[in-house]
Image (cartoon, rainbow, N blue to C red):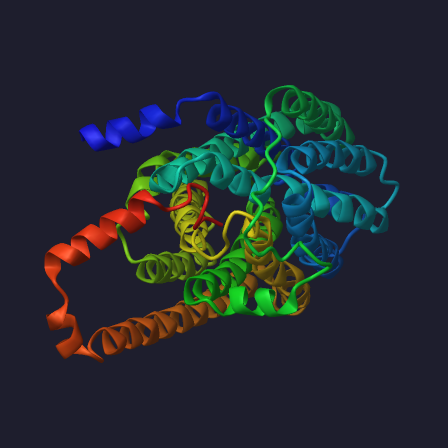
Length: 438
């Protein structure tokens, strides 16, 4: 317990507290519009199929911008990109408020995609820049807890303002909060460039070989696969069609916002302890377990219309997502060094964007032809398939590791234990501070 306490005491400093505060504000902004967007789009005349297409624009924008923005942050600095992201949030929300019809919503979706990529994953990269390797798992837990807390506040603000003053007013409130976040980031974040001497994906236009090697690392590959199917469920089923489904069974706009708030509170509550556990638990089995639970929840949602049951299911889904978020980001912690950390988190977000791009389009067609219940059932099958694939990769990696460890047992027996300990101590004490994170 003393080590646990010492870890979090080390994290109570300006660099960590300020980035957590900024990301809290960013997720308040995102939360303002999340339960409202499907209802706003349909109020502007969007069909369920068109709703899926417009939703997918967010995934397309994230897919196109994640890696370039991550590389840009490696070449410039995290602070500049983070502040710019908050300003993009404000601009996108003003565009939402001014939308004359459903088709116009494509424009703010593109802007919001760039804003999300410029804030949430780069906040993790910023954490990696300013926190020692031994504390980064705990720091990510605190960081993602701040995200979840912001997302608990945002839906309450958005749904209350929308119920009283209309959807455009809610978006303008979100824009005002985003501007305040940009000012906070400009005043409080520190500007830290990446270190010289380490090869960087951003040193040229794009180092394709280094990028390929990064993508082939097992921890990166498993986390990205899990992110594809988790985002399919969250962005497609939960965020896009759950509000429509809930409204269809008689749940009010304010209550829907409250459901998402409770989901976020539950999700945030488990992220801090999970940050410490993420370095001790096998990441691939944790990801598999979360995906299996997600699939079961998707099926259960399709089989009930009870507000109480839906609340419980959404809370459980939030807890699972919180575990996934910490574990997935910790799994790619060693995939990129200091100079490639932005590229690594950009790649992770690109993977999620694939699920966010193709999922809502396909789910929109399913919703139009077979109804909303079929949407949740289809997502459950896809998520279960992703869990099986991650499990297969995990087993393969574990087998290869055991095989390599046993290749030369005779040589291992000849190694002097004391000399090995001394060599290991020297290597650890001489390790560069920033290496081995996102």
